[in-house]
Image (cartoon, rainbow, N blue to C red):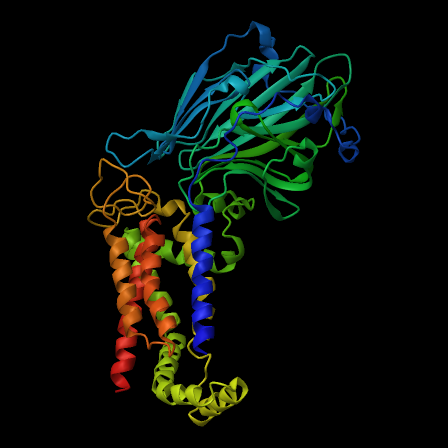
Length: 556
């Protein structure tokens, strides 16, 4: 039993140690120079996407478009500033696309003069961050168009109604294009309506495409957040890692949305009506990631009109905002195999913070709640260990007596368990049951935006970062920058040492020494973990110490 308990304990946390080493923030694998554009990738059009012509609709644009019929080449390029309580964006009528998108409630760091975080991570040297267009894949490249616009700037206050920004132009092929962006004062969501009318004398063929680009960060700041493109394909979440073979970057099926994600933020294109579509991904020069959503090909006869609606989201990976969209976009927040446990725990953490407004205290309350839930199991575990401790002298005599006959030794030990009604696995099973909950909390506290720059108290002003009292002007081996005194981590290690001293020692002295060494291992491991994780483990240890003390005091 002792060996099994020790083995279960060591293996469980060896997994945590290995996991932490693998997923420690490091330079992104995508941020590397790659070769030129793969033009054949853009020319491939699978047969499944060939569709019959849409029915003739004969729908005209509004009068403003009909009275302004400038071609793209005669329009001057300009920027349009969109200012809302949540963000400040700069659009350009070349594309049109987004040059800048700054979130007013999220900052680059904790300093008072910190700038709002910028979600556009690159200059537009490689094309547009956001593209929605009608593209003919038989042509060598897309048309770069300049659009007329109905606004110079848009300013939204908290009580303002939604406002629209309309772009329109006529392409060299005679395609009248209108793109309408609708902005809201209280949402990161932007509604987009894309409309085209064939004003030429020939049939125009192509596909409605929506494209996202961005540059991954040089370093990961969250332990478990995925960086790259994700999509909901046939109701299954796909996290995509680009491969050398472009053909393997194609994904076909019913696509609900595509998105680019980094540590804490997301940009997503959501078609209003999901259709069987194609996603293509590639890495551009400079390490820029590009994802293209391609709808089935269509043909537009003379005067024929077609329109498609999208939702564009650019903002925090926050469940509240993502669920409000109502297009399953909240599924982009993925906690892996612990998701079924992690989501309720996250909602509970957010619930506590709604009333307390301090995520550090909310973590403490959540830890207490989990401890209460598992109290009967841990109570039984500690009682079992206490009973096992009483049997240690008798078991030692049996081992000594039958040291040359293991079969008889094991038989007598099992008889001893039956006589005293002790379950040898009683101290192990409750711990195993709690492991999924621990991993779920590990995922939540190591990756959610709620803890980003969330202050607790005293020196702990960012629960998503390691705790450091003072910042040393030099580096300490094995400690991520900035170097300092990890007070919370040291307290956690001390609490684990006390708890280990209170736990009945195994019969084998070598095992006992190994168990006493575990607090040192955990202190070393947790030194670079987010302080929110360390806080949870510290409070959990303190509650376990109190529970053990109560049980052992009653059993005397």
